[in-house]
Length: 133
Image (cartoon, rainbow, N blue to C red; front, side, top):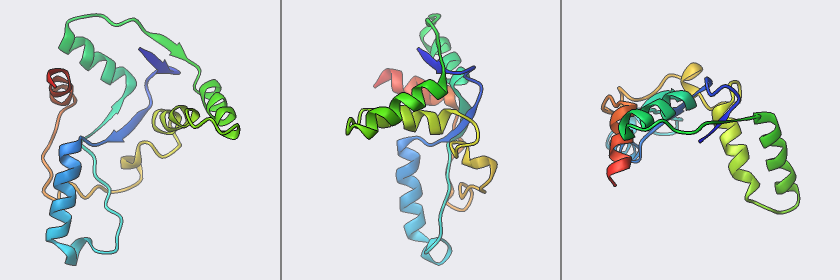
């Protein structure tokens, strides 16, 4: 597994079922949700936490490679400037995994989880579900 920098920076993430539930519930209460941004998250995690959860679920220690985030961002920008859109993945990962670029929106925005009656979720449960699919 490749970790950007130390793997400690966090980002907000939401499971697909919760995204669907949020959309449905938002449509049911338009008087409270219309014409506004609704931020939701299932949990806020770091790359290290995701790795630990996968190691716990699989019972295996994963091989880790530390990757320089700035170098990956620059590679992504270079690829994109040449019309190679495979560079977009490096840029998306950079934005999500490096503090200060918006990945952890729960730091500066209130979530609408309660308004939308979204369930509390755990990373370990989400990882277990992914591994059984």
